[in-house]
Length: 299
Image (tube, one colour):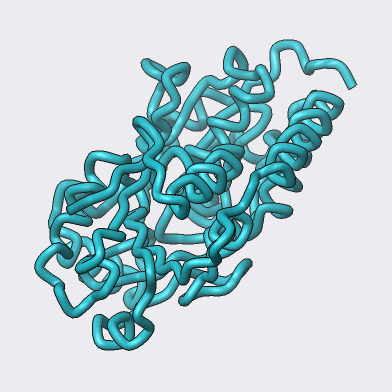
């Protein structure tokens, strides 16, 4: 299928923006979310904002998010009038996690009483909760954007790279942390990344949500390696979060210098092709090898 010339696309999801640029459709993107940080999206109209300050301490962010979820309030606001003016042919959002990005319901509420681009637009909600699901989303996005063949080739290349990751040989027990205050363990595709890298994932299961843990629970699990990959943060911030655990000498991984930080945004938090590289980074990390700019041992 040939590229749909002149297709106007709004992406309200950072991973979708990344996938659109991977598909060669960057020139078709006319609006993005506040979290879309792909370099090619710089300067594009921003259609969303979060009701929670990203600069707040983790415990405060957790409190505000939990409160909003209990009260049924959306965590993100969409600029409906701007979306209406942009009049896109395709709007991309997600249904995986209401904490992470805009959902279709939030879009519907934002444009309900406007003259209306959405009745004429295709709203595509990406749903991938596993590596296979991410590749399915890539294919679905390619079909919706009129570049099906390109999507099939990208998916095949990513699957080839995934299958050719050489796992670490000694199967260490690994805890991934997506938050510190309070601790959350990694879910969705992260357990698959750990297992593909040769580790044994001690909390969380492939395809399921991330979840809360307690420090006594983590201490009792006694993981060999702890990997800090706080959702929404890059390598430097995750290294800072990891350093807050250096006083926890009840954790053997901390005592033995097996506390690591990675670039969550690029390779772990988002359902994009970066998760394939993330698994390769983990495989090297489990061998004790740092990846320049992608992982660092803390402590």
